[in-house]
Amino acid sequence: MLTTQGLTKRFGGLVAVRDASISANAGDITALIGPNGAGKTTLFATVAGFLKPDAGSVTFGGRDITGMKPHQICDLGMVRTFQIVKPFGKLSVLDNIAVGAYARFPRRQDALAHAAAIGRQVGLGGQLEKIAAGLTVAGRKRLEVARALATSPRLLLLDEVMAGLTPTEIDEIVPIIFGIRDTGVTILLIEHVMQAVMRLSDRAYVLNEGHLIAEGTPQEVVREPAVIEAYLGPGAATRAQSFASRNAS
Amino acid sequence: MVRITTLALLLAAVPLFVQSNHLLGLFIGVLFSAYLAQSWNILGGLCGQFSFGHAAFFGVGLYSSLILQVDFGWPAPLALVSAAVAGAVAGLFVGFVSFRYGLRGSYFALVTLAFAEILRMTASVVSFTGAGSGKYLPTRLGIEHLQFSKSGYFYFILVLFVLVHLLVLAIQNSRLGARFAAIREDEEAASALGVDVFRYKMIAILISSAVAGVGGCFYGQYYFYTDPHIAFGAAVSIEMLLAPIIGGAGTLFGPIVGAVVLRVAAELGQSLTGGVPGFNLILYGIMVILIVRYMPDGLIGGLRRPWALMRRRPTAATG
Ligand SMILES: Nc1ncnc2c1ncn2[C@@H]1O[C@H](COP(=O)(O)OP(=O)(O)OP(=O)(O)O)[C@@H](O)[C@H]1O
Ligand SMILES: [Mg+2]
Image 1 (tube, rainbow over the protein chains, first blue to last red):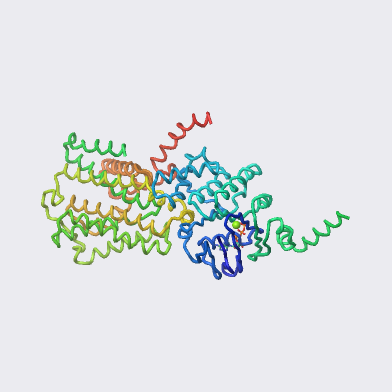
Image 2: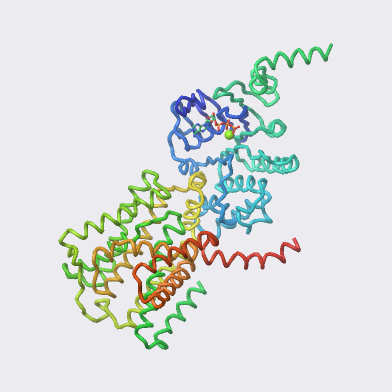
């Protein structure tokens, strides 16, 4: 569904994403993990047309979309959410979602009906008339998902939709994401909450300082020494291993 | 829709009861202000692109209408259409040079302001505008010349007023309005959701400046005269943006409320001070500071909030 080839994005001297080649297979939930500042959001922004890559290409549904504008990419069926949520603050929840719905339904009644259905699907059914600025953190995260989902995407890019949520709220959103996948939407998600990544994803990529350092099933990648070191610092993998073997003996 | 129709019908009855030409003139002035305010509101309120130089589009419509009638012998109705086209062309030009290069906020405001100033200075020197001495329209009473009696002008501006409000209502209740609002609230999020931000800003300025151009035509028919300062001066630009901001930018009725408040304040100021020059600007300044400080959503928003809270309370108690 989505493939990047050697994608590179620089900010001045900083190489935020370096030679990244990833793919998200149709029907899968693919996770992108990595420490803070690894370049995950930058990779999303480059894939979705918000940033121009310095090198490499993005292919979506067999089509080269490198350099296309975000709205064109949305029309093709790929949509991203924002890690720092961007609600249309003065509009109601329903009107927020309707902006997404209008991408597929030009007529107002159709767009509003679709938006209301999507709102219920993500658990915002009781708050459709509320002004978006008045939502809780969890509500805003759901709104971010709902608006994107309302564009009827084939591929949904979710950037840390669980950050800042309580464990209970995370438990509520996990089935919603499964539900979206079950309607045939392919999902690529960035997430720090490892427990959720383990539950949700079919495959995972690990990014560190712009480099891809591991890929595989989530169970595989968390055992990779390079991944453990990226999160816990140099030497952490060997320390963990010797700790484990000492306990075993 | 119901409220606009009701308002239109009530207003339509005004000339039946108001015989005084002075009073009728006040009504015309308020309706005209509200019309221009609504033109600004389409771009500034609905789409969030604040223009400080809307006089540019008003003035282009005004001059083109007068020049085409006087120097080219065009019939007035055709000049009215041309005023819309001329305003739109000016708007598209300003929009293209600003939005193409991503100018927003105060940068866009400055470009519009500069554009109006350039037009004002140009109109003061070139000959086809009549330069500094301005442009006159000869009197030829008759509907085919769009020249009327006082009550005729009242109905002329009332029709324009109703049409622009129906237009804004239609925009608000459509995909166009939803996309304008999305751009106003967050351009990046809008583009993620499939909105071609540049294109929709161009549509907003196209509609807004065409409406302003028609307003210019009305001015010419009503006052039979313009000069560079009337057409492109800061006074028109300021009134066009103050009324929506005071009343409530982005709302349907805010510009009307703002226009009424501004006119009443101006009249009061006039009679209290006996017409000290510049007093109105001080008054406007004070009002804007108070509104921005205490009612950032304008009078309509400021009055709606307590009302909404009062209505919400029972549901909150049960839910
Ligand atoms: N617009 C920008 N200009 C300059 N540097 C940037 C910009 N955006 C991101 N960066 C830098 O690029 C690097 C990668 O940032 P990015 O936001 O992609 O990381 P991330 O993996 O999403 O991190 P987090 O988990 O904290 O969200 C960081 O060092 C960041 O400071
Ligand atoms: Mg990030």
